[in-house]
Amino acid sequence: MNLKDFIRSIPDYPKKGILFRDITTLIKDENAFSETINQIIERSKKLRFNKIAAIESRGFVFASAVSYILKKPFIMLRKKNKLPSEVHSVDFELEYGTATIEVHKDSIGKDDNVLVIDDLIATGGTAEAAAKLVEISGGNVSGFIFVINLFDLNGSDNLQKKGYKVENLIEFPGH
Image (cartoon, rainbow, N blue to C red; front, side, top):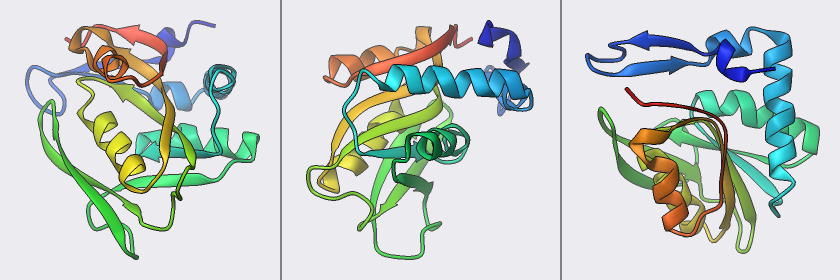
């Protein structure tokens, strides 16, 4: 099954000049979604981890299913002011703006090995912020798995240059 066939491309969303890669067409197909989860699990076998984290919100879709199947704790990396208890926060740049993500201070412990899953990597700003959250919490980033890599925006390459292990299921140009 070619997962690329299930990704819809939407020009000029969320702003002019962006070609948005939409995963809703992938997750609404039970076979494509199941194959995506299976591929993430297969790639995760290369990594040593005891927790799975995901970046809000589309990363939750994939990571929660993987977490359930692998019986690993699931950690939510959320947008600012969405978590009710004490948090660590990291500000970062997006391709089309700025944002903050947070994690509960008690979600990741010293020496936890965390696999980070998200739907897409573009410039890598969100993923780098996720890594910082894991690390300031005392954990180690075991690696990243992305469903989509926008290869010409170099986010995946930048993470690898910083020493992180990165797996991508499919690739598209960013524009």
